[in-house]
Image (cartoon, rainbow, N blue to C red; front, top):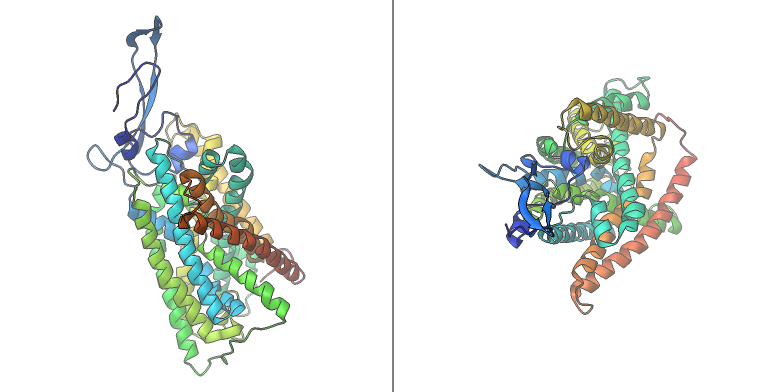
Length: 497
């Protein structure tokens, strides 16, 4: 550490890179409690009076030092493996069951090309975010949240009025969607054994929400690492089930006639294609990359890239296998979720035990995804209502946490039950939220931070991606609103879908 001079705090370059000192500014309760990694200890040291005179005054210095350690004196456990688990759970989910449907909207070549291009662009985009975060960390100012990045790079107005509301809408929308999907999955299991059962969808949604209600009390992002490891395994398992089920049906006597032509009028083809692009963008969306990187123990350099490699290995295995096998089997008859196709005309096309197993894997992962997307909301609640100067598990902090996290899950459950066609709304969120956060802002952050030459490939590549993505926001939003209007004529509140 550099020499301490009265009135200043000199932090060496080595300290900045290793994270021995994060920032002299005290962390708020949201960052301290929710985004911390295990072993990241915040120790406030009240230095004794420095018996030195400076302008004939006694200098009193209160310095907050944040120790990050691995083993022995370094106990931090926020590794790149944990980062990979968090990333995978935040991106790979049962939303991939809609990929055969998006291929039906786009066709073979455009569909597979779009899925591939979205994978390449988001992998590149998330790496850009990581590089920008590392750059600011090495300068001694580690950014822990998406809105922190926007505030420091673009200004407080961008953070307050654009990035923060968009991120909240996307993350809480994901919580609502997962709650709805969880209820639909339980109902699917129920109908397997009670085809004429009278229970309503909202009842299954309430049943599912009991699990996130309990898991939401997990104190921090890092405390979910083992749950997210299980989540990674589960997404591989149910993807394998879907692929096996599709191939089995495709080669059975019950195989549907394969027709890969586009349904509907030319106008429907165009709007359907843009709707499909919005859905694909949503399947790759995360929206919480900075928050995930915040769980990594310093030095952070290179760890996010390793975590992304884990995540995108899973993505390549699951996305393409599910999309291609499902569309190969069902063609333009692919439904918004491939599991619905497995039921045929109300009769299972696969053994009941196989469908039960697939849905159980799906249900378990949905619970994990719901909880991980509650973290930005939890972080805000902790910031508002917790006291960072008291212990995280003190009564003063535990009671508000229990109340507000429970209210968050209950509210999401009510909205999911009330709007069972919420998938259409999420397509709109995907256009307005996922594309700006994951396809546009990373390019802008990088160009503003590093100011690459306007003659360089990286500058024009980033600019091209941002401009094209901005066009997709506009067109995708129109297509999504059109679909909502069409579906609103068919569904009512608390519908039993």
